[in-house]
Every structure is written in C-alpha cells, then in structure tokens.
Image (tube, rainbow, N blue to C red):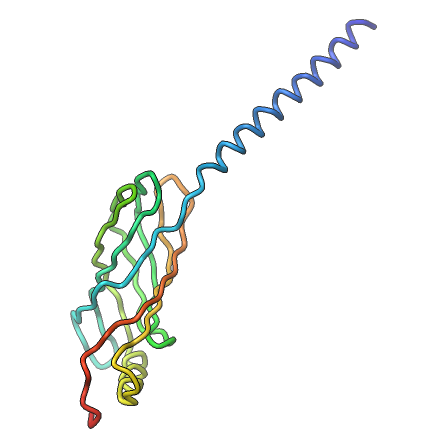
Length: 164
C-alpha cells in the first residue's frame, strides 16, 4: 500500500515538474517577440512598358527594429497608389536584415494597363502634387514564422501639365 502511495506522489511531482518546465519555456519564448520590420518605398523605375503589362524595379527600404538579425529568404508585396492597386511582386533572393539596421532591396513588380490608367486619371485631376502609397506584404523568414508588414506614405511628384 505504501508503495502505491509513493508512486502516486512521484507521478504528481513529475506532473508538477513538467508543467513548471513547460511554463518556464513558454514564458521565456514570450520574451522573444519580434516586431515586424518596417518596409517603405524608396524609389520606382520603369523597366519595360507594353500595352498590357508594365514592369518596374521598386527600391524598398527594410528596417529591422529587433535586437537580432533576421534571415529573409523571400517576400511578396502589393503596392496601392491613391488607395487603388498599382503593382504586385515577389522576391526569392535571400538577404539578412542586420539587427537594429536596414537593407535596401530592389524588387521586380508588375502592373497592368488598368492600374496605370487609373493613376493617370487621378493625376489629371491635379488636386495635389503628391500621391499616397501603401505597401503590404509578407516576409518569409528562415526558421521563424513569416512576418506580415504594412506601411504607407506620400510620394511627391513634379507638377504635371493639366492638358495631358
């Protein structure tokens, strides 16, 4: 009988020890929370334009606010100009974002005629010499969960003639 009671005590103690270790690990991992990197649009260059499709090289500034390097293996994104979809793209070239640092990435983006025409119509209205942009996407991280990002801002453009 005494042996059965001792086995029960050991089982209870084992469960308490396992739960304590699990809680310690869980709390320790909670301290490893990452902030999503900040991704902003730093430039746009036209690569090729045809009637149905336009290709751009976008320059993105990616800032890592975390206290550790982030090994990015890929990314996907979409850009809106004046709240309308403008271009989409992906990148599969690995880069390491330095801890508390930044990297400049050149990425390919594709737009279609409808997206360009909407933007031309907005510019023709000429109410402002700036365009709002929003970039939204996902960073694929090696050995960590993917990180989503979203950012917005304004792009100043030269004053265009209204008689386009």
